[in-house]
Length: 258
Image 1 (spheres, rainbow, N blue to C red):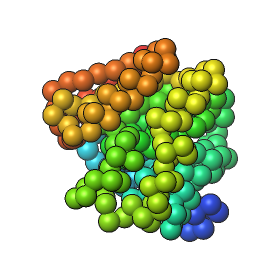
Image 2: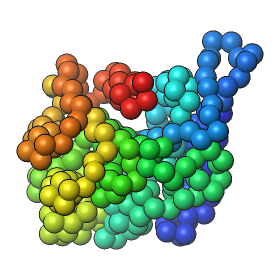
Image 3: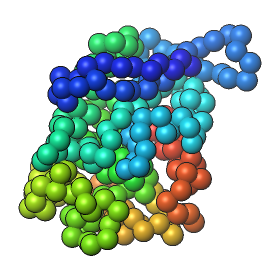
């Protein structure tokens, strides 16, 4: 596998951005590291949580080894504390991640395709919310989406005093009225897509039974079940920790590519 530290200028954000990219490789002499590479390969956009950045998946997991098993690329952008949102007072991070980033990556890296069957998105916590938001808003572009311990119910969090991100809600969403009925409301977006008869991506949801975000994931499962949408769902002992997410990213990759 190849690891690329990519710095480029984002026209959407109007600033320099940082992205780490893992690319498939099929070496014949590398000890202890298998791999394969097709001329066209799947790409997984892998999103970080609120307190982390684009380097965290490499620092806390063996994502490069997991990707090598299936010959996939992994794109890990830095979205700061944006909630992958076109912020009320800040950058347009939803547009950046869902529109500009895939276009730029495909222009740089031969083998990445815009075809739906080659594109996937996943994330943890804030990134789980971001992954579902991107995929639910654009179901024709993604073959699969995974949310681990997703902080999905942002309307509820905005109304809760004492939440760790409460002080920044105004910068991100503006009024809470900018959530329900908009792209920022993942539940509502999923319901609208289901009602419209959209072909949904493969969906993987998981959360630890001791995790405070479990009700949000259960609520997402209920929306999918009500709409008759097939999905994989997993509750297991665990909390909001990397021990849980390291296991889940392996399960999700196997679910999508195995």
